[in-house]
Amino acid sequence: MTIPGPIDTAPPLGALLARLRRAQGWSQAQLAERLCAASGVPTLTRHEISRWERQQRTPAEFWLGWLARVLGAPRAELAGAARGELARRARGVGAERGPAGGELDRACARLLRLGHLWLADPTGPITDPDAVGLRLTPAADLAGLRRLDDVVGGLDLLPLLGERLTATGPPGPSPASRPRRRRLFGPLAEAAQLTGWITADAGDAVAALRAYQRAVLAASAAGDRCLAAHALGSASHLLAGHAHSGTALLLARTAYAGARRGASPRARALLLHRIALAAAVDGRPREAERALAGAQRAADRVGRRPDPAWLYWLDDDELAAMTGRCLAALGRPLRAAPLLAAAVSRGGPPRSRALYGAWLAGTYAALGESDEACRVAGAALLDAVRAGSARAAVLVDEVSRRLGSEADTRAAQRHAALVAAARRYLPPPAGTLPRPARIGTARRDAGRCGSASHGRTG
Image (cartoon, rainbow, N blue to C red):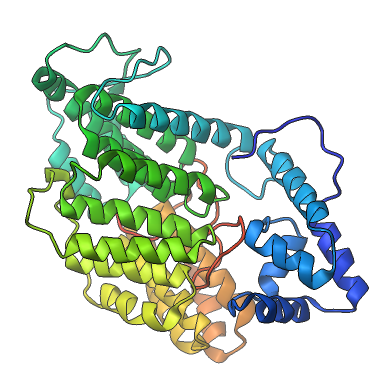
């Protein structure tokens, strides 16, 4: 994460790239072609160049190096402009949408610090005077709330959740007995993780990260490595691609490092999927592929150790769908399409169909199948209306925008009309969920890539 320092004097990176490109006499498409040829990565398009030049995204180190080589510019100059752009964004200058950069960054920094403290001693409580706890009402049924989250969107669940969970002041000292700590703090940790998940689905990223902080603190007090790792992994899933893909990757790595020895094979597979998605959207294809391979090896060992009760939803079908989503983020549409199509066709709750349907539509668009992409996106749009999930609505809206800007067919016109008619029925974000980037292409810059999974998954 970039920490804002003194006022920077570097020129905006977007303006610098545009000036260097025009000096070569190239269009954005021509620059994209030359970058693809030089780097050997065929997925970059003129749309990414446009987003860089309009300062909607900042290219990461991978593309900065190739930009310097192709444009004949000093890499240090481009890197300095990139740092200045990230610093301005962190201060909230020119934010595209969502929370003020500083507020979200502070929440990320705090969660990273807690993750590091937890990793130093995953079975011991974290002492944090600023901690805010949760109190469960006697009638709180966490298992029931989790299963409600399978079928009900975050916006509808938030009021019900508020009736069962109440924020309290800083927690008191932890009991010395580990079994007693687990009994007292385990349910609070699970409640806080669920609160973060539902709040994220309702669209409030900052409030969700605060809930995940509480989950890590409570799970640490309970000595539950796997649950603390699940909270960190859930936060990674939220942040992956939302201009914080580097933070997402650090959180995912921390979660896996702290819990892999004691976690069940299925839990390890989930944590490795967190790493895979964060690495994919952060432009680290080799790390993403290694994590996917590790997740598959872990899934092959399922049953050798009992899973925590909250992991009931992670079956083979869900793991396959998550693999398809990650392959789409890696720019592997031929491999991603069958897995995502299977996830959509098997039915399930509307939020699941909307999220995986949006990824599938983006994958078809990447394959040049615009009519099929419009058909799938239309179905995902209707599912997003049914779901009551702000996260699903944002993701489907983004893929619809892409289809509207890139496809000029009768199917695209029909889809545009459907979007116009349905937009008023889509749930608005309750808070501050940022807009994801285009779906179905590899991303090796610091932009955003939507998180797609239904309420049971991370």
